[in-house]
Structures are given as structure tokens and as C-alpha cells.
Image (cartoon, rainbow, N blue to C red; front, side, top):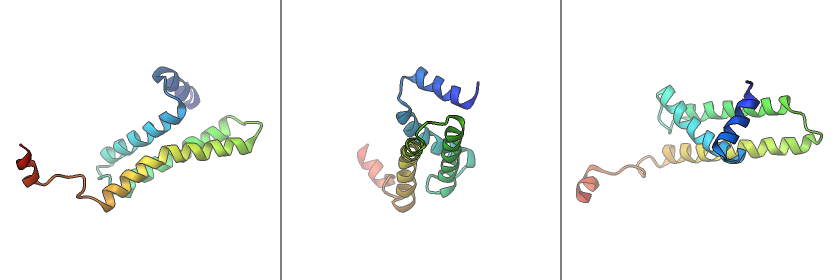
Length: 113
């Protein structure tokens, strides 16, 4: 089973459209890369892993299947990169530039309960 067949299987198995799978894959890839690399989400390294995987996937798509209208295929690749990288980029920027906004202080936690 090659990469294209695996992607088709995941799409059929989950019932999700490929666009949604790109969004989910980007976020899950970011979290998995952060865990494997033992880096926080504020580090650019997990984001770069997701970017590299995304670009490799799109390169595969562009070389595996040649559409009659290559311009349309390139537009699809750009959309896939956008869908995959948007939330990981937001999470990276949020974690990097607003690190305390996602954490509760010990005093606030004690007040709540």
C-alpha cells in the first residue's frame, strides 16, 4: 500500500473530507512532533517538522498524480498547505508570544476550588 492509498483509506475510514484531514493532521502532527522532540509548542522545531512533512506530502501529490490542468493542481496544493499549517502556526505564535495566557496561576486555581 503506497502513501496515496493510505490517504484514501484514512479518508474513507474516517468519513472526513481531505481538507478536514489536513487540518487535523497539522494539529496532531505538531503535538506529536513536540512530544517526540521533547520541545514545547513555543519552539519552532515541531512547527518545522510539520512544515517539512506537509511539503513532502504535497510534492508527492504533485508527482504521483498529474492533472490535465496543472494550474488547478498547484492551487490545490497551496490550499492543502494552508489548511495544514494554519492552526500549527497559530498555536506556535500563541505559545511563543502569549505564554502565560494559557496558564492559571496557583492563586487563581485555589480560588476556584
